Image (cartoon, rainbow, N blue to C red):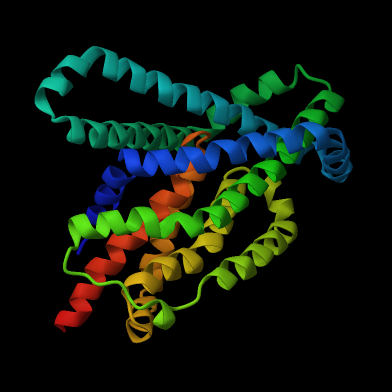
Length: 309
């Protein structure tokens, strides 16, 4: 059973109306709530991050600002390239592919373009950094300082949104996973409620660890590239164990859960793939549902192999 098969199935299932509806009903109100909280608490948070910024050397601050501005350029390049390809070849693609395959193709195309621009930026980073740094020299230190402080304040509120969405999503997992199970794995039987592995305390524990690690690793948020890796790692840590158990508890016995848990590399890989969606605004609303569907397909396909052996 290949991981690519699990990912492609999960992309298709996440784009179903049943999952989209639950994701929007959950994510949009929560996003509005945290936007309101950020609106009222913005000045105190900006003051807090501003004091932290005061300890950071200007060279590091400038590098982080260059990386941030370069990120906006990268994002614009990805969307522009995608729009150009679709506008030029859209009719050919529609005639060639079915509606379901068209949706999967669009996502894979967007991911490929993003990867291509990332590789380009990595190979030519000196040039990119040099040009972006020239733009940053137009701004006085106070302006750049406030800009990075605002970015860090937004990052804190953004993490509060991501964490709360990850926790709130857990109670809804059974409703949409059961429909997928009846469609794709009709012979699978749910585990009795009294025999299921407990998982909700795990997400609460990992949430506390998440914010502890975020506080400890906060200085790394000023290091270009490293800050993205640290952030994705923390998101993956947050959901890996709890989301795996939330799915496995429905369809695997305690003995089977322990056998599946041995595959830590796969569990981390699936958590990382799903956590990458948190980097994309709006799309991040679907990230926790996508991760649960990833674990759902992997658990049921892996469980069938365990039973056969």
